[in-house]
Length: 429
Image 1 (cartoon, rainbow, N blue to C red):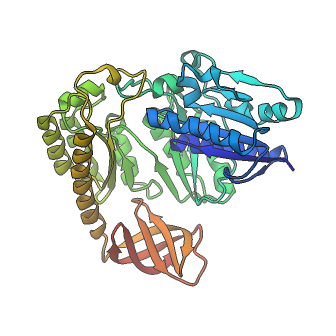
Image 2: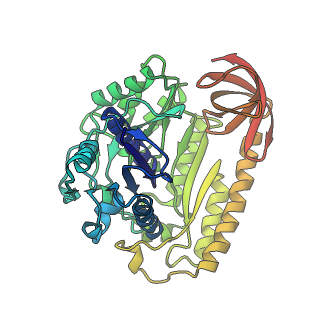
Image 3: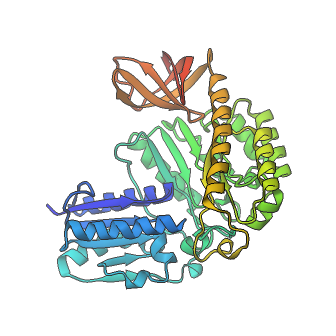
């Protein structure tokens, strides 16, 4: 039996696409092995969001060649699409951000007939959503469902619109069919993913209409929105989430900065006052919701005053948790050419300050669940304890000798250890 190994870098969309490649090759009779082993085929699903991610993609290609010089090497994804040097890569199959559904057959052809394939087209001309089907996620309780691709925002620090192309969406009817298949294969939670998930749809179809259809799927206990911009969260969407238990009590809403001047330099869609007003409305309509965010620290031109404005904004909003990133210059973006790039030591110090604030807010948030019931979808067992995530995406453990895998139970929370809740098992939900 021929073997393959896959390395996936980057986002949840890449994770979804990698799962489709795995299933496609398994259908052709291939067996997946670890990337560290000698395989007949290596797939590197690349990322280009930062220069570091692009460098890691190249490193994985070199690692594959060293492990088996005779292997078929397939390189796919954002690095291939965004890099001007991609076509110079000495590999067997090279695929950018289109023709991904042909990857398994192209690999098989390369292995059997010693052919080489290159598919790198102008992604800005691609209008149709390319369906890449996944029937099941191995070793995962929750499943991802890619419903959207591309981005029209063009934030000044971001290469992704050039790597993924313009916005396009899976038709609603097909999205429901895909979701039903994932539920039929045993998944009780689906995470809706995309490059710009909140802009899902076309004409009459939008994210709210998709959610209205998905909550009707029997056996689907939880629907999670991977990420959404604040200006895409309408009053109707908030009301629907508030009144539907199946929608996860968690929204990840990137803010990126708390300073309006920096937000304008970033070409972000919303300013801080609007962001704060909308978050206040969300919390009014959905008490105890988890609102997490991403923030970039040390963007070019970020003065002490701008940083203080960001700290004040973060203190006012008090996100449940934050992903904190130091600004990383990306070749080919507008931000690369901006003046006022900060030294690494300044960015590091500011990141530490924001991370400390975020940790304080997170600890206060999870402590608020003590002496309350939560619903947990359990995922794995370790040392006599079962672990899973709440609707708010908080890792929670209980002691149990029963098999709780892939089941939703009510848990009475009695305390927290660092970043985790712990409690007593109640009834099945």
